[in-house]
Image 1 (tube, helix red, strand yellow):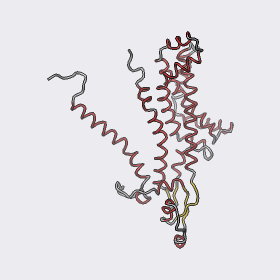
Image 2 (cartoon, rainbow, N blue to C red):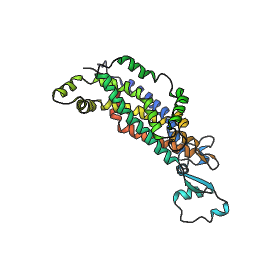
Image 3 (cartoon, rainbow, N blue to C red):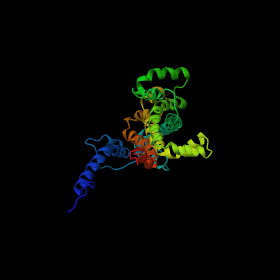
Length: 312
């Protein structure tokens, strides 16, 4: 019987599959528990020992998008019979809906700031990476090191100076201020990642385009960008994840108009205390945009990670 030197044996495949499955289970277990908690009632969410099997309810999602107030027991029977399904859920607990919550506004703020900073970061980062890759920039190595050095300390280390600067410039609690801040933090990452992708694109393609009469900008737009799309997509995912999940700056610099979802979700309070199903529901919905964005770009992400790994 002959054996292949490179092909794994059946035992190796089985062992590898078990290891990967175990790792996936351990990784996904907290996420699955959060999703399940969003469909529990308030009592089931704090039950000890924790309930794995429970009767699902949308109480957490109703509480997430509404504010409620208690009503006397003698008034419960006076409530109109024609109530919506979410009003019935609230009414069964002896409460009534007082109005909408601010979660929708905070979620919209996260979307505008997260995707806005990512788009601006990709625009500036792509052009800067192209310049460093193709042109003889004076002190290029020193400039690249300076750009990289901005990531050598945690961003929160400069929180106080940024807070004072934003206060003097009137950028506190504004979309513009948060987009500019997240762009500045992510720009070094995007420049370094994208420069590596630009270096892998043969310069001969651009030279051929210039010979055919293209301008430098047209060659960049029509020749370089289509080949660098894998790197741009993978870099955009990393930048979006940071801007989407960032908590410290959002707590310090926003409190109302531009507050994002991460600092808002922990403050969700029910009528009788912390509303864990609503918190879990808010966290679950907050995961969806990044998951969808990553799934849509998954092919580019896989190609971007391995881009340049195999040379001919």
